[in-house]
Image 1 (tube, helix red, strand yellow):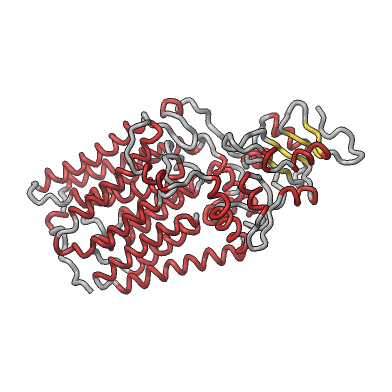
Image 2 (cartoon, helix red, strand yellow; image 1 turned 180 degrees about the vertical axis):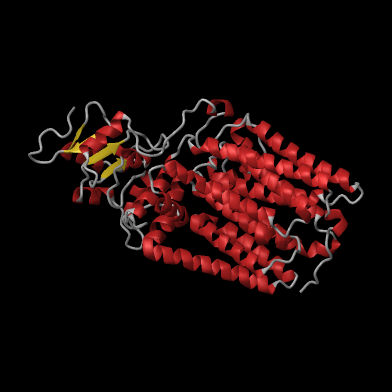
Length: 535
């Protein structure tokens, strides 16, 4: 065990006068207002299919569906746990309200940043909160953080773990068992959000435990592991009640890891290229995330590691590897959301701490300069983002202003009115290849086990795992839905359903009739029922 290092900051250096506290508080209030405005803009901003899947999953779970058995998805359970809870509390009359899940998690992460033991004094915590909410607001719309998606959810859970335990451990600060246990639980929930975050969380957790052990924090290490285990048991219990464990292993892990991966362009070259700063509009947000990460670890490794703390260099470097592993997919699109949020959280903790380490600068001037620096960083990020292109929908900030407000619930567009006229409320429908929003817009549930069918599903059907079959060609004739909504869309402009599921077209020709005025709608031809829904 390495003896505890002396404090980095003297008590006098951390005390701020009333004018400095008022200025920092005003900046924090402005950052919070900025964040609230962006949350409001995102409340009815343009949607995305992944978000629709998560909302549909929560809706179906509230109706008794079993995740990974009667409602099959490749995504992890935590997002569905949250949407299920939202529906149980608020109902589904206003699905847009579920977008406040990300905002609520951001507020929780911000509270952890505000109370972290890694920062000395109130003014440093005010700077950290200002940075966290101000920078998050700057990219809230640009990188789809407003959506109900697992990238944002995992990112905010991770920031909570970083602020509660991981960064304090890196800085040689004592961490109480309660904080450590909560941080461990957040880490497990990140993995349950998407298993692909597992390597990053393992590395970050190992770095925290290593750093805690170097200063004799064995109680905190045990609490961290206990919290992680407790969260794991909670997720398992939820899966036993509302999901299917073999289905989880088959569809979330095996299909993603061994089937879907062959449809992606994942290479180490892409990963390394994503870490190279670029100024093109489509790469600016990723560049911002990389800079946040680089600045944070530079400050922690160079400024914080005075001779008494050099023994913490190893844990911090291991943490750097874990942080980079969050962006292993290697792209500038919305899938880097967790890496982006982690970078924002880290720089929000590192920059205020570094700003307090200016012993030769008079205290009032240093505090004023720190507040000014934080404000300039937020303004500079926002101004730079005005020339970036957003993801998942490629738009500039100017184009975003012209987007009409979106309602994610029941639609009164003629096509969806027709669906409700053709299909009874208790009858299922099928939408292919992938448009989950149609179900909620039409107010009709999907057929069991199928609400989409993509190329990797057809590939998985040829060699299923753990006895979990998922073959539309085999199951569709057994329980054909009253209506099939076929969006004539070539997946990723490469995969046509005629190529990967040709049986569907033969089945449609034999048993369904296409609507003349709504060509995406195919209605089942029941014997003796006459013309099905012909206009």
